[in-house]
Length: 112
Length: 111
Image (cartoon, rainbow over all chains, first blue to last red; front, side):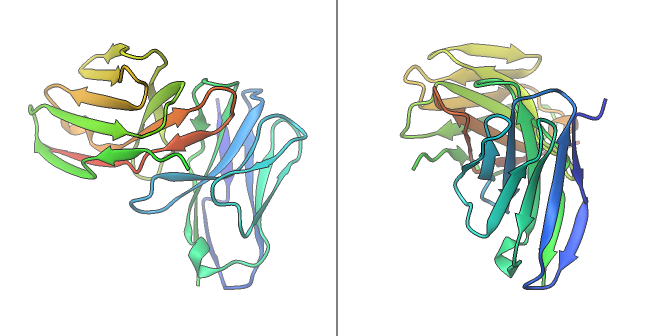
């Protein structure tokens, strides 16, 4: 009963490197989300996908791109990592509006 | 821009004490959710409230949605060490898929 699975769990990058964070859910949910969590700032929405084939910007989209590969998978890409992108990244999914979000355990990303 | 302010930001109390955490906004939300997050894990939903004035109880936790649907509170009776964690509120707006998260309240209950 996996729920939302994120890979990798930890990653260290150098400034300017690129990488893709992977997220997969096995609950057949339509909507998927990427958040970043920084101390004292709660969770901030980066991008979301209301349904397969659609993506939209959240509060803090600059420096990121996303792909909704299929209904199960939603990836987040950093094209040229910057130290300001050091954070914990969470993926979430849910079945519809006003339904609870189910979160993965996060990816801890450090950019030197 | 919608904002959700939580207070207090940090709270350290003794086992058995009561506490209240507040979640306030100038915006109206169609629903409000409370989550608890433990170190190294993602947030886990505690409750969803959708009606102004609604009160929901979950064992020793009582959640209230303000009449104007702009604020919410979480009250814990007789706190236990197992209640330790980061508490997050999140507001949803009708017709959108986005939730706005509050700044969080970090609770530590000492045995």
